[in-house]
Each structure stands twice: as C-alpha cells, then as structure tokens.
Length: 245
Image 1 (tube, rainbow, N blue to C red):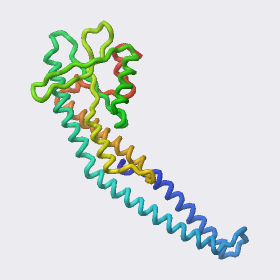
Image 2 (cartoon, rainbow, N blue to C red; image 1 turned 90 degrees about the vertical axis):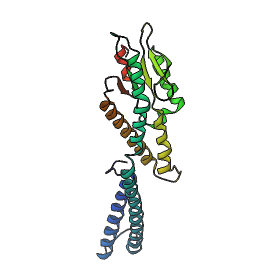
Image 3 (tube, rainbow, N blue to C red; image 1 turned 180 degrees about the vertical axis):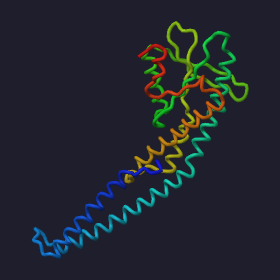
C-alpha cells in the first residue's frame, strides 16, 4: 500500500459518517424548532446518534489497523524485494550474460536477455507462463531453451526466442523468484471471505514487484549489464523490435 493511499473502505466510512452526522444534526434541529416531520424526531435523533457513534468507532478502529500495517510495511517492504533482486541479478542474470558474451564471436550482435516483469504475481504461475509462450509462438516465433554452464553455481536453462531463418536467438526469462512474494503477502494479509483486504493484498503485491523491478534495474546499471538486458511485460513489446506487430 502506498504511504498516503486511502482504501475504499476508509472513503466509504468517512462518507457514511458525514451522512449520518448531517442527518442527526438536521433531525435534532427539526426537533428543537418543532418543525413538522413525517416521523417522530426524538427517537430518530437518538438512534442516528447511536449509529453515528458506532460507525465512527468502527472506522476509527479500521483506520488505526491500516495505519499500523502501513508503518510495518514501510519498515520492512524494502528488505525482501531488494534481497530477491540482488540474488536474481547476482546468481543468474550476471553470470548468464557473461557466459553469453564469452560465446559471442567478433562481429556478431551482442546477446539480448529479456526479463518478463509481471504486474501480478499470478502471471508467473506455470499455466500463465505457458499462455505467454503460446502468444509468442502465435506471432511466428519459435521458443526453446539452452543450458548455460556457469563458472560458479549450477547450470541453468534459459528460454530462447527466434524467428525462422535467424542464426542467433534472443534470450528470455521469467523471474520465478518473485513467487516467493506471494507467500509473504499471504502471510502479511491472509485472505478471508469476510475481510476487506483484497485491494490491500493486490496493492502490496504490486509494490513489492515494483520495488524488485527498480532494484533489478539499478543493479543492472551498476554492473554495466543494462545494454544486454531489458524488461518486458504482458504487452511483449520487445517482439516488435524483431519486425512483428
């Protein structure tokens, strides 16, 4: 959740408070001046006052909970995404690009690695990944995989994307390490049928992803890898650079 974000529950609660207190005030004035109303003013005024107090208490309690969560998120949200980004770049992206550069012959185009950055963590589910790859193949590209042996660490398979007749593929990766954040979000904001936190859960997930994205970009620039690595998303805009709409 953004630092100053107001949830729809808080907005609705504030609007309801204003409505109830306004109705209570008007009913009270009508009662005092003996203005004729189609109902008995005194009991309605008392009832509205009690309901207004109850709603104020509920909204206030919810607001305190949200503010406490925000303070907690501000304190710890910069740790997990940063750690995942560091591990992803250091343990995979950097050695993968280094390995590909070593295999590039003089005069050949430098290797390109495209990282799929999702908007929702669910985009990294296996079935979602299959659909994304199917969309790529639907644009007349073939997809495959190559195994890269790293000097340090275990070998790793990397997806390839290539059009018919091309000699060198582009490389593609889904940062599955981001799926770790799904468990973290679920821990922080468990899903309950009677809760109002689904909006908060999605907002927190997006903040984590955006933080991860920003830190990956920072690390790529710091390590001199930005020329060989780019981000893409569900739009798959990078395919247009290969001559397809």
